[in-house]
Structures are given as C-alpha cells and as structure tokens.
Image 1: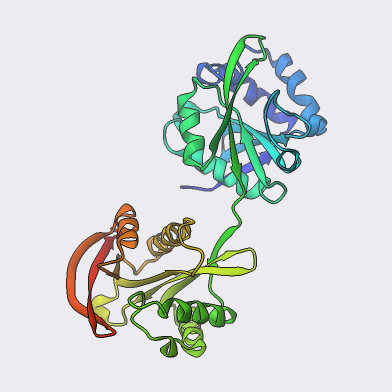
Image 2: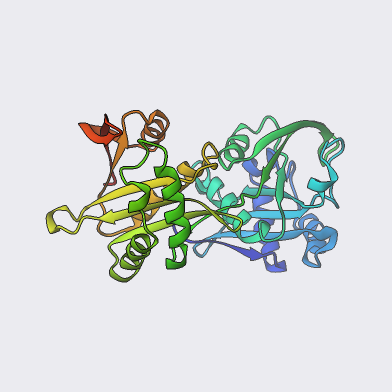
Amino acid sequence: MEELRFESLKESHFTLIHRWFNKPHVQAFYSLKSWTLEEVQQKLAPYLQHEKQMRCFVIYHAHHPVGYVQSYPVKDHPWENQDLPDSVTQKAAGLDLFIGESEYLGKGFGPKIINSFLKEHLWPFYQYCLTDPDIRNEASIRVFQKCGFVEHKKIFSQDALWRSVSLQLFIKEKESLTIRHAKVEDAHSIAEAERQIAQKPGFLCSQPSELTDENVANTILSFLKNKTGVYLVAQSEDQLVGHAFLEINPLQSLRHVANLNIAVHLGWQGKGIGKKLLQKVIEEAKSSLLIEKIQLYVRASNVAAISLYKKMGFQEEGILKNRVKVSGYYLDDIIMGLDLL
C-alpha cells in the first residue's frame, strides 16, 4: 500500500468535506443530513483554532484525499453514563472518522488508517482511545474490532438531529510492547533469558552452559554487518520479554530459505508476545528480496507453539524422530514451513 498521511484541517478543505458530507454512505452514520457549504464552514471553522480541543485531519492516500479524522480529549467531551474511572478519562482521546471516497470502501483501508493515526497522533499523548459507532454500523464495528478495540458498554443517546440512537462504546489501551531490531547491547539479556529457558528440559536443544553472551552478540553483529539475517526483540518498558531471528542459509541453492528461532522469555508467556514477534518476523521476511520461505523446528510436544504457527499459516512438512535427547529420553521435532510467494 502507498503511503497514508494526515494533513491538518485547513479552510481549503471545506469544499472537499462539503462534498463528502453529502455522500449517502457518509450521511448514513456521520453527517446524517444534507449540508450547505456555509453549514460546513460554521461547523469546522472553530476547529481551525483548536476550539473544544479538537484536532482534525484530512486523510491522504499518496497524494489523494480520501477521508477525515478527528480526535479530542475525553475529559472535555465525556459520554453520559460512560462508566470510566477518572484515571482512564484523564488519559483518553475520542476518535471519529469516515472514508469520503467511495472507491476506498471495503478494501482494507479502515484498519490501516486507524492504526496509522493511533501511532502518529494519539499514542504519543494518550494511554487510551475511545470511539462510539452506531450499533447498526456493522462495518465500522468490525473495523474497530480488527484494530483491537474492545466493547466497553452501550450508550443510549441522541444524535445531532435529536433522534434516539444506540452507540457501542469501544476502548483500546496503548500497548507497552515494542518490537525492534536487536542491538549488540541486548546480547546479555537475550543469552540470560535463553539460559533460563534451557534449564527446563526439552524446550531448547542447547544446554545453559552453551548459551553464551559472546555467541549471541556475534550473531547480532553478523546479521547487522553481513545482512545474513534478521534479529528482533520484544521489549516491554525497559525489559526484553522475547526475541526471534531469521537466519538465511549460506548455501546458494538454499538462500531462499530462512530458518526461524523464536522464544518468549519466562514469565511472559500467554500475553500474545509470540504472535506479535511472529507477525513482525513474517513482515520482515516478506520485505526481503531473498527470502521465499521460512522454516522452523518445534518439539512435537509443544502443542501451544504448533497451534500458533498453524494459525500464522505454517504447515507441517515432516517429523524428525528422536531428534533431541534429554536426560535419556528422546523427543521428536516437527519441521514446519511457510511459503511467502
């Protein structure tokens, strides 16, 4: 997808928004009626001076205006009976938007617009985001759910035409998890986490003594200098909570295949970190000009990991019987692969 960007509302946008306000799909749940240009000017002109603390933008796809989005502090614009603690209200922004150009509807732009706007214009300032689609607006509700918003409560209110309306109030909390490329300085934390995981028999092939800071640092450095792989870490606040790396096979005939290793650090399992790491790994692989396939090994007994890999599109390609020997017992490995082409 080409670049999405948000341009602060200007008076020169009023004619465009007037046209959008009078489109049937926008009138259905947003503008609600026919508008004159003068009415649009009266509504939006105060926002240019940031009255009511409204921050308004026209959404552009590449160089083409496609819609409108606005945000505002919930503490200044609360919903009646919103049932939110003050600790949330003080750190929350409300969000309204619509896609004005009909040809952009139903093509997956909604989630991309919302996620981009949250990242660029809300999360730097707020901890929570709330939105209130009409309960009849099923398409909008699906989009917000896809973006990770969760239902808070139904609000019974009146719309701008003083008609009774039922709204579904959604809320999303800013994620504290960051996925980034590993640095050499991360080596000790990664190696220490692997040493802790390796103390549990069967999870890793390596023994704790074999997992050194130096080896991890050398791997990260090699990937950075020689472009032979991708090393990612998951970070919550100041703590590393998971890591993953893709290593491209050095043989010319196998260079289209990258081997995946992934680990969620002890105490952080069951929080969706593995899925987010895996999503980012796949995204990085798809952007590579070399990688056509991701391959991994997983213990046959690791049901949770196998289930996650399958959900992300990996398929079982074979079983290596008795591949791992731990304390006199043999464990099978399953080979799984994801074709990217």
